[in-house]
Amino acid sequence: KLADTLPDPALYQEFSDASERIAELYETRRYGQAMREIMALADKANQYVDEQKPWVLAKDPDRLAEVQNVCTQGINMFRAIVSYLKPVLPQLAVDAESFLNAGELTWASVATPLVGSEIAMFKALMTRVEPAMIEAMLEDNQQAIQPVGAIHESPLPSSFLLTDDPISATIDYDDFAKIDLRIAKIVKAEHVKGADKLVQLTLDLGGETRNVFAGIKSAYDPADLEGRYTVMVANLAPRKMRFGVSEGMVLAAGPGGKDLFILTPDKGAEPGMRVK
Image (cartoon, rainbow, N blue to C red; front, side, top):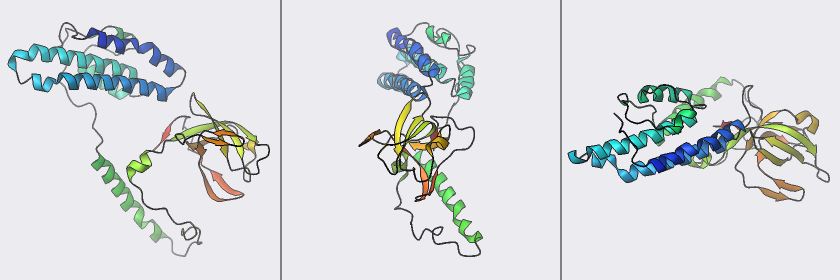
């Protein structure tokens, strides 16, 4: 059962006050910023629980009421966070509603903390992804792709055998994870006056636009690019060029010249989606 009052109502008020700002970010399609705001609240909740250490307090029978207060505060902060995440993690919200035993989570419900009521017995709502699990997945994938070369009964051109362009040195997963790849929509494409190879692209990342100069003029007419979806490196440091600042890089394959092919995602991908 939850305590009848919150031990730190001012802290909870910070979570409640964030609702208008997070709602605005959702409505203006700034989903990445919305997630960052919600995760900042999660950091505050984690810090509170870590400082109070209810698992230590629980060892003293005389402090069980204090444990109940701390847990009530933590559960209410969790409730607010899940309410804000409900648009993107609906199943987590359904599971949390069952645990909290207080009806449907709504945006308005965050304003009133949940106190004095009975909650269900806890069961894990998510499984933490550990590094060992990622390594196992990568190893399974490596084993799955090894036999592919055996299906070719006759030699392929040297370019397909990577003799002209060998695979780069192996990197760790952490190095790859630093690269933020996103789906982008090309909303505008223009020739760059005075540039032989560059096309200026205006990319929609789902509420945020980026200006990117891409060396694909030899293969594409800018008019044919507008409206297409592609993949870009979104966290590449801006690069100041003679023609302006390039705020990222679109991905393309091919040796160059007319043999350049920008990457295009499957139908259904939306601007701003992360490529993993």
